[in-house]
Image (cartoon, rainbow, N blue to C red; front, side, top):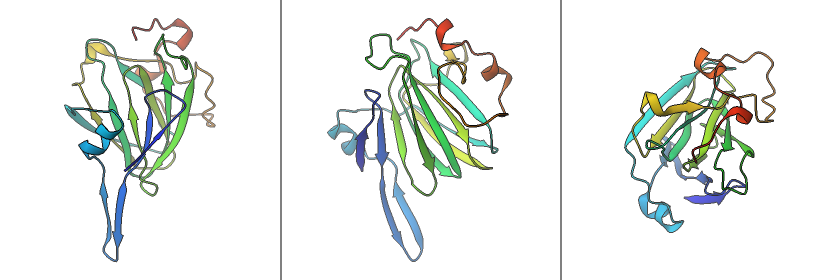
Length: 178
């Protein structure tokens, strides 16, 4: 596995090992010793799968203390534009964002540390994202930042959004606990 640091401290773009032959592919999506080599020691507590239609935006999501968590995300089918926003007050990159294309073709993964809001745009129907998290989901501690409030250009005019995501506060109105 190759761990590529990004401009957001603690975020890694991970290129997993892909074994390919005449039968198809076999992909190693997690190997604890490889994570430890770069100083990461996640203990995964829960996993989720989301499947989205084309033009769906989900995000920008995170959990607040005491249920803040690290995430590992990857696309098992389809293609998404994955977006991360730094909401850590003491971070040099607070308020900055970065995007990555995750697809079933490139097999890229993202390791997302605590204090990073996560969202994505589904670029095709039936795009499926797999999430691993280091803490369980708790509805009362699950929050978000409005997707269009921090300067990222989504390149879509009429996204499909949940009511919850439409009503998240703007970044300028959010009081970070990180």
